[in-house]
Image 1 (cartoon, rainbow, N blue to C red):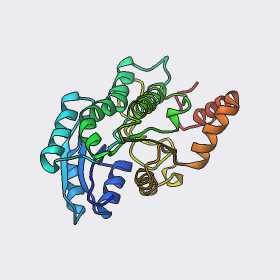
Image 2: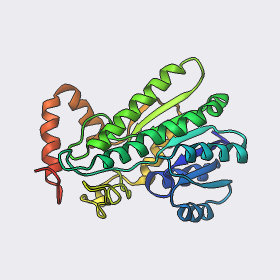
Image 3: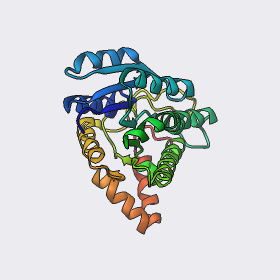
Image 4: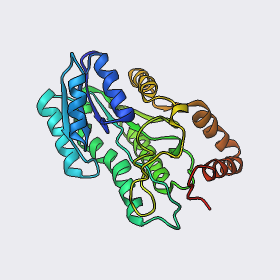
Length: 267
């Protein structure tokens, strides 16, 4: 893993920021992408001993993703690892939500992964490197009140699983990571029915896995070239396994859990 060039999207907060800190601590050079360039610059100033290139990027814009990869190649001449971490969530039932909200979530979560992977792939193949996609438990089971979010994460999983099969003989490593509930800003910035930001989390973030813990687990999975990883236990491995065996039961559990959230959109 020494002297790798790692591109991380959504690096201004949460898991992306924690990944940047972990990779920098291990001595790897970084290309950090996010819309909030001020946060990336502040993070760069904190990370010592490695080269860090912040690039203002909206992953829902194809040209931004292309420019991100070009900037990485111009600076470092190669890409070893691409971590597609940028994402947004939503919280509304389909009956109430504006279709533009669903489109925006898909543009960021799915198309952002597609665009970045498409332009980075030729360079990663040269290094026999890694493409990583961050989904969630919602990429394995449908989460009520989050139709757009779960759909986008299912799509990312299907895209990357197919990419893996296409490149079985090329040496490409593809990892799909599914964290459970992780403390981050994603619930605060989640979109509600009219497209505005939720502004506050409906859950107790203190009881969730920390972003730093999640990043550490992901780092090891990438290093060991794992193909799939469900990070958390009860809200990850267990619920996905039970869903395979007793899907009707998981439907009931999920409905009750999400309906009991503060200000739940479920009726």
